[in-house]
Image 1 (cartoon, protein in one colour):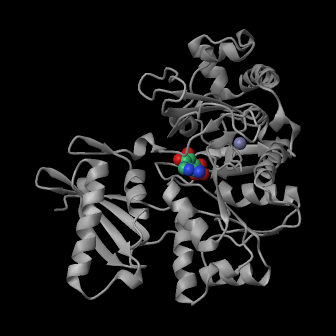
Image 2 (cartoon, rainbow, N blue to C red):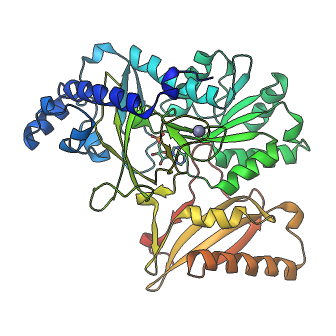
Image 3 (cartoon, helix red, strand yellow):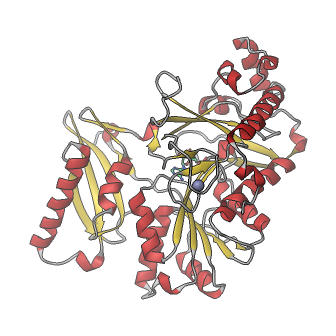
Length: 433
Ligand code: AMP
Ligand code: ZN
């Protein structure tokens, strides 16, 4: 029933494994130039860490620490033992690099295979990976997991939509890995070709790599006629295979035998009360080449309370609300781009793409939302469009508590990225307006 028996362990056995692995990983981390210095500076003796209850003795690690350790000061084995490196997509600032040994890669592939298996993917399935390859972990990371499971794996890579569609048809693909914003874009390409994605053989989509709402998941499921499962990971923690939804589609099981999760208040760094939203902090429990302790992901989420009906005890995290650095502050109001998405994607006339633009008019900050309208609703009658514009403005105002400027645009007219979508354009610092 499980890909790995560790999925079905009881809480106590799982915590015993965690304690043992934490003890080992801290001793191992002390061999890296970075942690040996930090431990010395902060008076941490790795031998004091005997189990989970000693976690607070350890320092937090930040993205800046990773940058400062560039390229290899977090390695705790010689670089000659490393067989691969990956980098973060660098949406915020300079890239950071993570190295893997051959064993690390095997462990990672097992974790990804576990995710596939959990949602019913089996060796006879045909899998197409539509995420970018190269340094981005959504390519090779997912790829080796699918091969580990035994699927026929098509490394389609990102973009080139017409070829994607041909591969889906010709090889009767049943399972795809796709970035949610690209899944919505690809739907418009199908439409342009007069094809219905429901006529394909698709059953399962793994969607992730960027924040997205329940509304977007439902759209993807409706358009393609499949089940879509949320996949969370970050290159600092390998990449995909950190947390993944089970068939219940209610929260993502975080693989606690491999990653030790905490949720902290981003301001005070103290643990949040059970069920409260905070910043996810993760420790690699198995990586031998480059362990990272208590890494501040910047991703905001919470633990979902209670057991999951699927039987796995690995705790579930909620859909990622956004990154702490994604928060927009406008006229003193805090806004997350996902609040905008939730409203827009629930409106049937709204097309598959949108863009949030922040501007400064004089001394006043202003939020403008450009919204694509589905072609069948983009009519000549100005009164109809004006009505839609007013309706969207009202719904956004109710959600955001400030009134945005809404601009309706034609389908496929907004910029489309092949990788993670850029949902916000901040023009406030550029002397516009
Ligand atoms: P990278 O290391 O470049 O692959 O980027 C990892 C980041 O992508 C994470 O820290 C999240 O901010 C974001 N991310 C990845 N998967 C998801 C997901 N399923 N939902 C929301 N955000 C995600
Ligand atoms: Zn479950």
